[in-house]
Length: 232
Figure 1 (cartoon, rainbow, N blue to C red):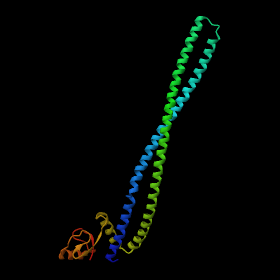
Figure 2 (cartoon, one colour):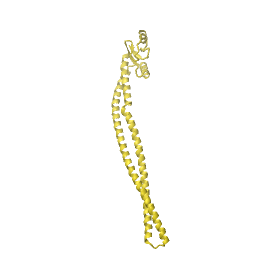
Figure 3 (cartoon, one colour):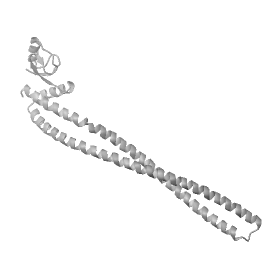
Figure 4 (cartoon, rainbow, N blue to C red):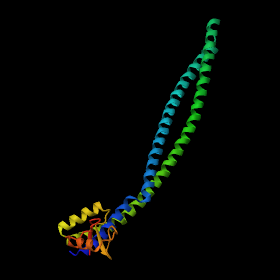
């Protein structure tokens, strides 16, 4: 393994790192997260409105049932009143009962009309919430498809680079590879630098002639400043 080959390996690793970073920092990802959160929020709002509408329908059904019972009782009482044949006291009592039943009916009808108006408002709100959910869901699906396509391309490039890296590391001695990987972890991905005109390609600091000689005596050569591997 020629040390200069480590520079080629490092270029592959840097490209792999770049692609991995790109994969995790796509602009669409943040928008997707926001859109997903908005879809869940609008979904919860839609469910709340549907629950309110369902409860209102039950209240309407109950009110209509009560009204039907009240109408039947009123009709029966009016029939008895208009049929006559009762004492004046009974007639007055029956007249007051009819008056009370009519008042209850009118109040219940007014309540039901109010509930119907409220139902129209809720039904419109449900329809609007459904439209928003569909709109946000469509955007979420669009973003998901775009992200998946971009990831597919990146993953293909990563697979190609990983295959190339496997071939390259096969020729690297285990101890040198271990040092290289350790330096990459601690040196922001740059483990190797070429020494050109006395300047380390890793930290870009100048090595004096004595420092260059000291670096050359190391196996492998190491920069006296940043301790990266030097290609001399």
